Length: 358
Image (cartoon, rainbow, N blue to C red):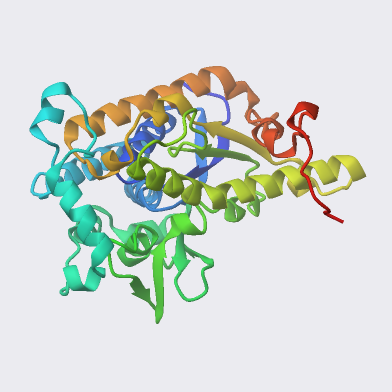
């Protein structure tokens, strides 16, 4: 039985389609551990869906109900995907490959999205995912929840800026706005403004959590690879890598700002305690995520989702064994190492650019 006061943590959850089941596994492990208390969650796309399900479960009952809610949500996603025309090829099923890169239906759909506006492909605006979310999540409970704060990021199409939806104004439309890929869905209109996927402007947004002085430990759950060891060699790999860079860029910019602020505080000995005391942590497995095909983000087969959940659970379990004692004490994520290459001076053998650059 746990007798110590739980350590409070904020969570930042990335989007990534079916890969959001990795985050399901991380959340399952965190909710299982009564030494931890989730104070706030900032989520984008699949991260926003996970966040809403957790808040619903906590408000209805307790962390066990939240864990059950995550299971039920992702099972419902897999059941809906059974009727999708986009399925793995017979060869991929035979060899146990969850990629859709060689699926004829996926390739056909990919080409259609490059040629037609979503309104032309779906003039009635039918979106089974929205209906699923509305069935699985009681947003009255989410908005009434005081156990955890929820922040959902979407991108305002008109301004290009991140918009944060929060309690008591969360809804199925807000979550769908956060997950609205512009080549696949019509923009979601809320209060006269059109929104696209939040990944373009904040995947996820960190600043609502940085501004939360009630909790100083921020855990980023990253499911999109920041680096790839090998450059892309095909047109599809180029496009996928561009998308990864785009959907990570907002997060990297916020992390860089936090890093520069910490450097300024230390260099000038500034008494900005709300920022000085902020501790950053990262749950991620770069090499494992690298091996996942980008197309598999659209594969919601139950066996694949369970595999991802177990992988995410293992990430969180390993992280807790290594860094639980860091919570409340220090950051376990070295921002200086993350940005080391950006500030690395050129090697003398690399030479200097030619020409007059005065």
